[in-house]
Length: 287
Ligand code: SF4
Ligand code: MG
Image (cartoon, protein in one colour):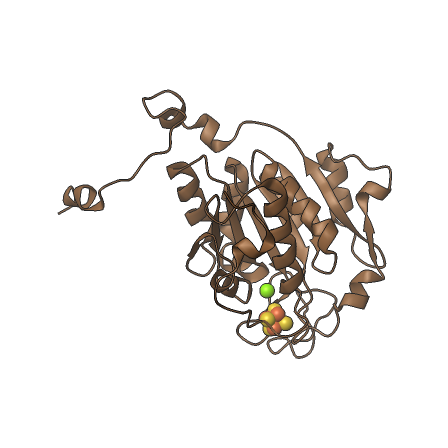
């Protein structure tokens, strides 16, 4: 069998992202993490939302679903229940995951399914030309907020923590090695893992640039910090300003929703994928 390399994920299409977009760094880190874990294109399911991030489904060869706006997590959880042996990774935008999909995010975190979510957090809706998203902050001026954003932003990390996520991290699209490590850790983690990825949108956000982030970011594993205390994690996650932490804020191992699902643990299907269902037979019950 040929070994898995970053080239294994090539399709015949090239990225359409703007030159310099942070999505390039995330794409590279994701491929590196999958290679490191020995996960090839046929071994994982990626579930995409709608946005610049979602376009990646055209140039990243894996099993994939590009669903409706904000609905990555219902699809990802359904797929995990159907075949819980396959790694499932949701690729979501900040608007996609925390605006349209905000309620799904909270309820997925609470259930702790064994799936990973990468939030491409650029503070704007890039695909629709740069309106403010729920994570927009620092008085950001956008097409929809010409005088600057006045709302308080959603903090993806604190929301994940209080909702029950069991692996909560922040990465930076401009640090491919660091992000590779975080993504590999999130995919390996058994439970709901969330990485909020700071992703410069070079076209529509001229505040949160690569230099802006680079002058502020520091790594949690370079200080005396242990990701085992939820209250300490919340406190760290609230830091935003001259210093911004990246790394793993919190991790705990506890039962997943698949572990607690009676049909998967007690019945004849215990430990087995649900298998292929004849859709016509199922639908015939409703005719
Ligand atoms: Fe990237 Fe922004 Fe361009 Fe979208 S609009 S591809 S997020 S730089
Ligand atoms: Mg966005």
